[in-house]
Image 1 (cartoon, rainbow, N blue to C red):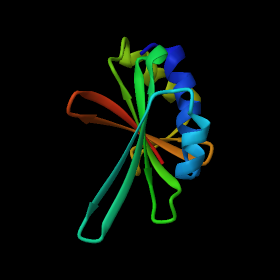
Image 2 (cartoon, rainbow, N blue to C red):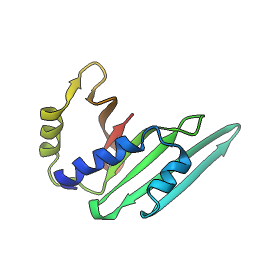
Image 3 (tube, one colour):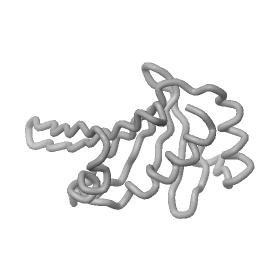
Image 4 (cartoon, rainbow, N blue to C red):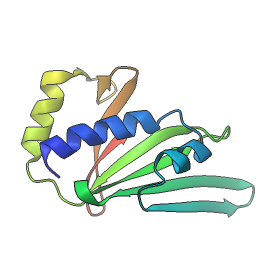
Length: 123
């Protein structure tokens, strides 16, 4: 994932937050989408994964009990230059040290390491 792709994906991730399950399916109907429903003992979790082949990344959208997206994870296939991305974030957005995230308008973006590499979390 290049810096240019990352900047564009920030926009996709932030615009996905606060959308309903149906709205996301409509908004991203031109992209490959995987919809998952996890049901067990009264728990019903929904997830939509959107694939951006041209950006070499996927977004996973998670929903609250009102069926509104309140959390997004950006999964890059690989990051060409993490230092460049971190510099971009630090130069353009305020970092909240107590919450360990950058503040982007009304949203937060955090960094985490998961199985398979680095991911960016939006909420």
